[in-house]
Length: 360
Image (cartoon, rainbow, N blue to C red):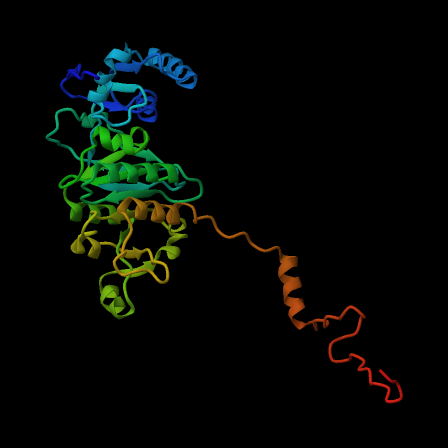
């Protein structure tokens, strides 16, 4: 039986994060203070894991957290620190990550290489150093405007982490989270993000109206994710915002900076917040789908819509001029009829008449 015991944190503002990708990302990203790295080194460790352990130790020595080796008898310590969640033999005691309070998204530079962020002047969290926060964010994409994911009142830390993971993987520049009624940036959230939360800038807003209006003044367009509407509801929805299918947003980032908004798991995006958006976008369901299955998981919907924005923005390849000319001329040419195996065109076959004098 594995004995578990409580392991105290090194600092008051620290947390235990766990898992290979999360711990490695936290060490590499330089976004938080690192206190102590726990590595499992039991006799049942596989050869591949032992090689990975050496790489993790080397990485940790470069960034100076303490390293503590855990043997088989103390494996319960790691299980306790990870709350029995998969840790892959790595637990890191590190400073907590915090959402930086944001007033509005700023203007995009003329060459689309960066955009500004208007950081709040005050915060009630003493661990957030507002003066140290950057006032600009570099654009990750080439030949397109920036894209930001805004999540409103997402309560499940697993969903929040999965959305952060998808946003970072697909190329979003930042994630903005509601300051109230939202899951925290906890160890569970970091684990679900597979380390993406250590790299992508994460902000929070407290007043959505102020945030949207300020960002709109700086040229940003907002797209509210809503359930697909029936034909009878189209006119009602159009009065609030233009309703788009997810396939219609592919070129939006060629026209200006965009922010996609998704709402909570149960009720979706708050109606009054959806009204503030410039457009509404939905994901149509497939044919012959039971009415009980009427929506997607919010993290899945976020991944689909982010992909629509970010991976459909390149203009279609233009046809060569000679190819266009060829197609134009081909319309006026008569298409030869196909011939059968004997080389005879259809309609001109030779019909053989039976010989009345021949006996069968």
